[in-house]
Amino acid sequence: YSSVVKNENIDVKVNLPSVGKYLYDHPMFILPVQMDRHKGERRKNSKNLNLESQASGENIEQARLETRSLDQDNNTQMQELGLLNEVYTYMTKKSGSLAGIGLADYITFLDTTEKNPQDPDIELVHFFFTKADGAPLATMMNFMNWRKPMIDTLVSSNQDHDTFMFMPMLLKPKSHGNITISKDVHSRPKIYFNYFDKDEDLIVSLKSIRIIQKMIDTKSFKKYHMRIIRIADPVCDTLTYDSDMYWKCTIKRRSSSYYHLSSTARMGDNMLSSVVNYKLLVHGVSNVRV
Image (cartoon, rainbow, N blue to C red):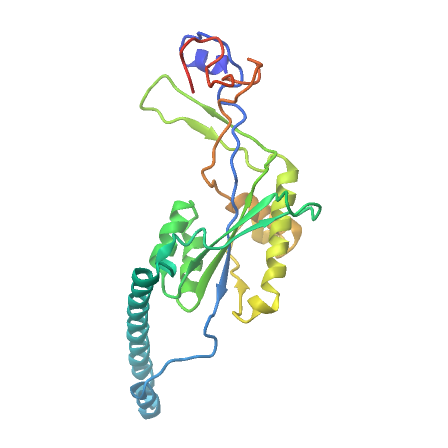
């Protein structure tokens, strides 16, 4: 790391080679699935039916537009009623969807090696968006740095279906990156995650996708008519869909940080491989803790 600071004309007080090295994170892959909790149930009132039955010839398209508008009004009313019910449930029972943040409502720990379930290598986090909830869905995916065409595919699916996100996260990644700095206090640090530099990480993530596919194929999940949303990708689409090579390509292209960054100032006894001692004091510097 001394070469980095020297290039920035920063004086080196103590040479600690591991400063900024060994950057570990929990990379997370997002696998979106569309689902229907009320498959086959189409709510129509008598006015809907009258519009459909009276429509003929050139009036058919107008009737369809009016029907669609009425369906949207019904959906809005149902959503508002559902929100009131959730508020009542939380205020009276301290339970329901408002009692949590949603992200941690369903968490699964997986051992993809199938050797020791008490030592998982994947944490499976879930996120759920109700039908026609495209705005917050797009906001989340923007935050995850997804490209607009990919986000549009999700939002389009969400217009007619609920969206369920499976998000497998590597708990014990082998790959690590680094972070560099500049003398300019206004310059942002350069972070190199180096995800999936080790093939072992890619294999574990691939196994987690195969496990999710098996979950979707179970009786409990099938009743919700779950189906993986295929996201177009000009690079990965050149490979056979659902092949191992396809998913490895997709994992590399669609994984993002879960913001669990650590280890750029490691604790240890050796100044060559660590930055601080067990008291968090920086090696070779008095009265400085990290």
